Image (cartoon, rainbow, N blue to C red):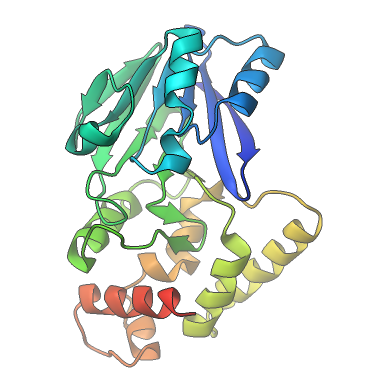
Length: 254
């Protein structure tokens, strides 16, 4: 099992410290910046042994080199994008596993946001570290992929258990909820969740992690194959890829 600590950094990023309780190994997921990560590890008395990178963007790998220089940690990242992951030691791809002490991560290739994005699924801990592929009530911008790639990626992650905790990398949930309501305003689960999110944020608390079952019911980007949502965006009967592309385009201009 993993002990997971969330570290807010920059304006809206989350970095995660994860400790395997059996071995004491400590990983950092997507360290945007080094200082708060090292400070929190020191406060906890944890020694960083690994970095897990989901993709190459600077707000996910910016702390790699300094953390590695200070701790000698092993950097694990996507094989499809290893040329853009600073200091990478272990490159992984779809369907491969990585043993992290007594915990094991299953790797998914999830291109769309970037060409080489991966996600790490720790089944024993019900923990999904998905970077910028899924957000609470959203998904990442489609910078380097296409709608078919992105929908395939989301479908892979959607197939995980409802109990999975989605540890995404940004606190975008309140803005995502406003957009989701614009395309799915009759969804009672979404209306209720949006109100809960407003209350949580009013108290200054994080909305992340979210539960994958809630994402399946309320996140429009995971529901492009829902006939109701397709009808809401004027694409009744259309292929889910076309529906996803329309929803993504609307979000880009929302």
